[in-house]
Length: 492
Image (cartoon, rainbow, N blue to C red; front, side):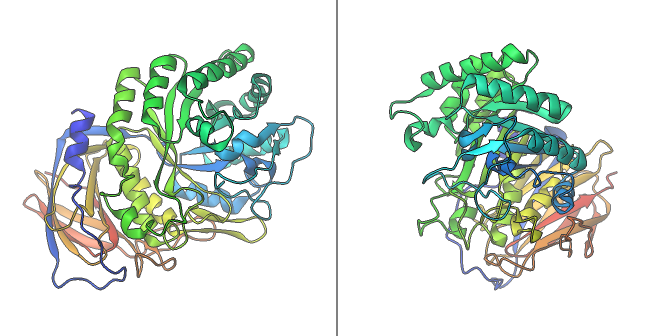
């Protein structure tokens, strides 16, 4: 089944109406919806390393952060997914310099942390040292994750990048997926790193010089790119020009911004009529994948750029948004997704530091729910949900043994919905895991299957919904402002 056709059959309609107040008060009676599954029409596979996090390179200025000795952070990362991808990059990668001898420099954002860079203001230079890279390797070993590593194009030189790449590659070994050269070069003309007339052609020439310098010292080095802010034309041009030189296409996406704009709200974040809705970008990304025969990864994303917005990015609404986005990208054929964070950024899935410990923000729970579907294959899922204004979305997958999972996201603030899941031969018991919180705009008391994520990242279901299928149908309820993961093991 073609990816574009699969995406159309999997996602709910994009018609939208404004949301209602964000509490749990619901309209009288439940809305109804039906979801028709067709395991005979397989879609894209969800890679085992689909789940990912993204951090600023400036975090490496504190070598004890990404270290096996930081057991609490190891637990949260490993608890999110047994396998995943840690992307090191962000705006601060353009101000981070390889220093094989110097002691770690002071980062920014608090005690031992580097939060999300807001993309404006003066940047402090940081140093990346061998100790940081050795500790990073041990951290990756402890978590079972691998790494995408960004090199400094904005302020660095090809020779500096090559020297850093040699040590990083030799130290990370098979934990290194690929290098990336530069971060959001399509914004260099805007952020002062290049002249106002800087465009793709100039970037391509610079990228080639850095690539040649690294390959000159590391003939087997692997690369990804272009790691742009979301300019799809750059992704397509890069794929056409460097498709034989890279192993992965990458770009970024933020659903809202800037945070100072009062129009950046929970309603806008959850609405498919959001002007920045990623569904508009997907066809261009699929075209780049198709023309280059390369996988694509959304390697930096979150709710609101410039570090997130308090009252939006740190609320339960972000959990529904993140889980839905993960599976939307999977349905589009992406190989993975990395949620940007770090420090105490409003949108960070994991917040904290070595002094005070770490905790999971609401968004973590949405990622955790969607991550239950990795290492399986999506199947066609046709949703009919009149009256839900595009705020109910659904995805279904099938594992090698034929067991199916369905993820339902109800982003309406006031409409509960009863969903009838239909599939040929569907019968027997099923179990549901609810993702819930008291309010969409709440920041606490988030649970997945009635359980909170422990201080060490441990999670196990405590309260499940017992369901039963008969005659090819299964009914389940999804309250307003919640999500449900359904596991079905029996089909006759």
